[in-house]
Image (cartoon, rainbow, N blue to C red; front, side):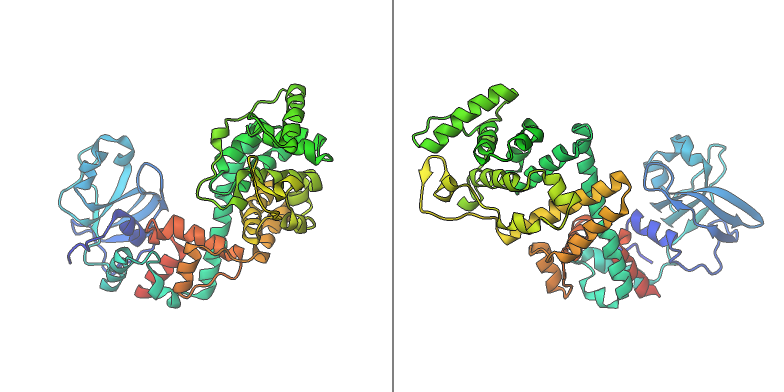
Length: 431
């Protein structure tokens, strides 16, 4: 049997791990009867591929490591002969045996050849998955997947996605020395800048202690002076009364709190709609703090009582007639769009609730995060539309987040062998 064009060690790991090969009359290359008692634990780090395996060769039982290669000569190509860790190998599993391998005492390491023992249907399905140009490589085989298994995998993917996000939150939480309010402010600001102005919003939130904003939450004018001042927007000459007064107020606040501005170059206005300009976002943020006060309490501890507020938050009077300080325009109310609100809830509030529950050991907040995602509409982006074209439809954000995780971390990287759905597809072919 020829090697399939796209065969890989990962595929051979998969075959060995799940014993997807003919186990009848199993022998080593030197003709000794072989019985697999335990295939071992799959090692994804450096070192032998499987540890704590147990096999019987002839009348002797062996426990130790199993190494897997396409060609047995790969043992030398990977320089295993000079690494003591590999000298305890009890079995060498290969597709082709083109060179004998020895241990440190010059004894031949028993070899099992899989070539000829793997079904042609499994090989064909594997080749089809890897060669498929559709980003969702198993799209035509999904109907064969058990629905319970499919949705169980999606549930696991959502937790996986939230855990990835919480690892980033952990870094921010540590940098604030365990300050939940400041942590949430930083994360919220970053996502409030959306894709274009995340960097600027992140820099602003790290330069401005949220406690200062809370002290001034009852005065919208002071909140705007603090935000626009630290953002670097008040360092120019103005002709209108409102920005001039903001500038004067910020000078006082700067001296009082020893504040520093971030470079105004952080902010980007190109290729975004005027309603999404950073100046508009800062005014909306000021209004939100003015109304809600402690954002962490409002959106994490007391969810969902405050969701209506964020959906209706607008800008101050000055910004109803402006998009920037220097360009007045027609009167127009500017509130957050529905998709922007959903984005914030999905990518800020839910992960923060999950992280808070994780840090405090409260299952209640972890469950609240999942419940929030179940109640929110599914995202509408290229990934979700692509799944819809393959007759997989996300009913809510819980499912759309799972599909995004599946696409980015498995489908795009062609990690079908590590995917619960890919496993089901392959097992169905040989089952």
